Structures are given as C-alpha cells and as structure tokens.
Amino acid sequence: MGILVENKIAFGFQLFRIYTKKNGTELTRLLNKNGLGSTLIRGEGAVSEVDIIETVISRKVQQKVVTIIDDFDPKAFYLIEDIRSKRKGIFAMNAAAGMPRLGK
Image (cartoon, rainbow, N blue to C red; front, side, top):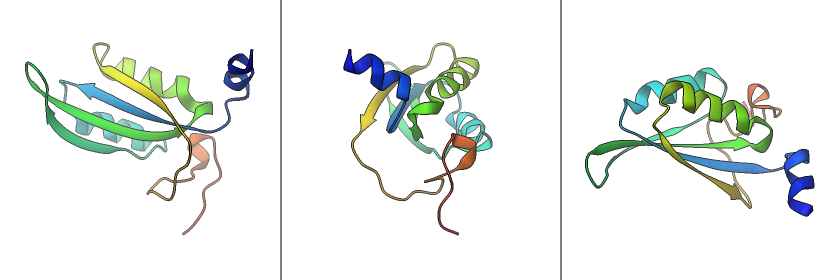
C-alpha cells in the first residue's frame, strides 16, 4: 500500500542508468534539451561497446524520461534506482524537469 501511495505522490529523485549501442551523445543532447542533466560513459559490454548515460531526475518526470529513451532506442537497457540524497550538479534543480532551479 505504501508503495502505491509513494508512486502517486512521486516525491524524491531517481537515477536512470541507460545502456545503448547507439551514439549516447545524441541521447545526452535529447535529455539536456528537455532540461535534464546527464553524464555519458563509454563502456564495453559482453559482446560490444556500449554508451552508458546516467541522469538524476525528479520522480515526477520518470515517464517522460522513459518515453525519451524508448523513442531514442527501443532496444536500450536501463535501470532505475531510488536516490536517498543528492547534491549539486549542472541541472541540479530545473523547472523543465519539474523542479525549481537553484544557484546561478
């Protein structure tokens, strides 16, 4: 019951970790265009090179991020992790991501 209420309220933050065989720079640009900061990491998977993109978001925009990922690469593998706390970041607080922006 508590999880259902928590999902409806959508309070807090999540980390998306996206693995794609496509050019991750493009996904990073899409996320940035939507007011979401992201980090691109080059990696090597079991069978090929992969781009790993991480982004921290407000839970309120989770479905929006899933849509961006699915539109970019329907075969992308991604993980969603709840975050207990966070600090700073380029897009740490951004109105486009459903949150007020702080800082300069």
